[in-house]
Amino acid sequence: MPLERRDAATLVARTSSVEATQGLAAALASLALPGDLVVLAGDLGAGKTAFVQGFGRGLGVGEPITSPTFTLVQEYVGRLPVHHVDVYRLDQLSEVVDLGLAELLDDEGVVLIEWGDAILPMLPADLLEVRLTFGAADDDRTIVLRSSGRSWLRRMASLVEAVAPWAGAPDGVAPC
Ligand code: ADP
Ligand code: MG
Image (cartoon, rainbow, N blue to C red; front, side, top):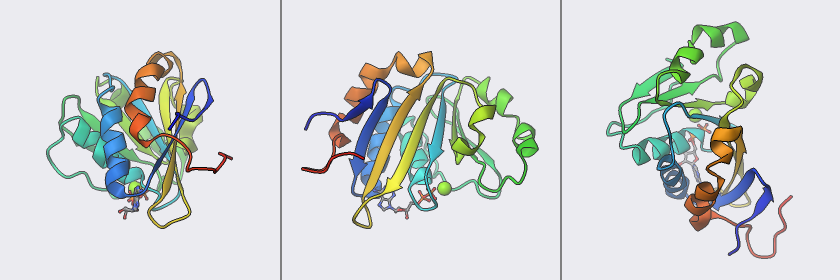
């Protein structure tokens, strides 16, 4: 199936199971570089944490990755350090500053932020946005990947290749 691309920086994938979403995330993790930022967008239950679990597995994280709901930031050891952040509960943007995001991003690891789209103005321009939305069936998800900034745009060809197994719209369905 030809890969669906909305513009030069956007790719669309579809999955029908949590394992598939994790597999896609693991494939993307193979492209991760020190200092990378991945922003996860999507409603509760869309699969943001599932994506981080797959991404961590792709980076060789051994321990189980859980939702950082009560700690805001959780760190894991892999090929690169993984900083898993969830800003859902943040009442004020000032709390984001308290998270020490700048330090996390400086740490030569990968920072993944659930609900990060809510704080986009506070984030660096270089990032990969992963937006998960629900599909027709319970386990269907559409995953839109948007590269922003030079660092991720430079990797577009590799991204296309990594996502290829999950790419494309269902037969006969035009992307909206
Ligand atoms: P979020 O972090 O966005 O709130 P979670 O990753 O915690 O979401 O939960 C996603 C839920 O949806 C899990 O229970 C997972 O098993 C289920 N699920 C079903 N199909 C998929 C899919 N295709 N991709 C991701 N998760 C899925
Ligand atoms: Mg979550």
